[in-house]
Image (cartoon, rainbow, N blue to C red):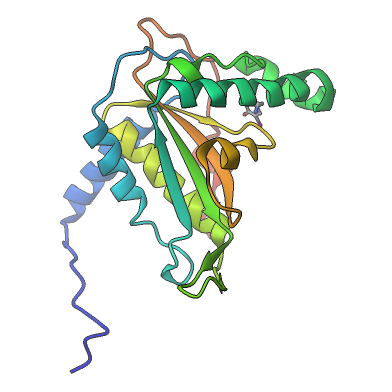
Length: 220
Ligand code: IYR
């Protein structure tokens, strides 16, 4: 008997139930909005742990699981991250960003000030492992790392939303300061800084819409 394979756990649903579930999921996920005004209210870490467990189930290249997550709740470390990120952002908004990019961002109302990096209860720094390191300290090849980590982040964001938390996908560029502040090795590249918490009461979000199904998909 070959124990490399095990029976798939698969629940066959009726079509009405499938339809109901897909509609319910869409109605929930369409309400996810990127939030920039976070309350400083603490969040239960067990929710974050479950969301990370979910992210860790993501399909990925050759099951190398090329991700590492650092959950930051420590105030001093969040402060350091805010200071370093705002420095990068000032350079982006004042010097590096071409006018077209600034114009594209203007409906979102963003700027170089990132107080939420300090006041939101949790930051999750996501690292992409470009390669692994084996027991002998040698490089181990990893595959499709960007795609794999992107999928894991999608699941993470979705899991947090389903659990009742708000998120902000923040990508200061470059983010190399995260290796230093969080003491991560050279094979790990910062991929995303996810801000997690409750929105402040009466938070407003940009009045923007999503493309329709016909705009984003073809059925042939
Ligand atoms: N990283 C900057 C700029 C920014 C870029 C994109 I593309 C956005 O969708 C939003 C912001 C910032 O965080 O302000």
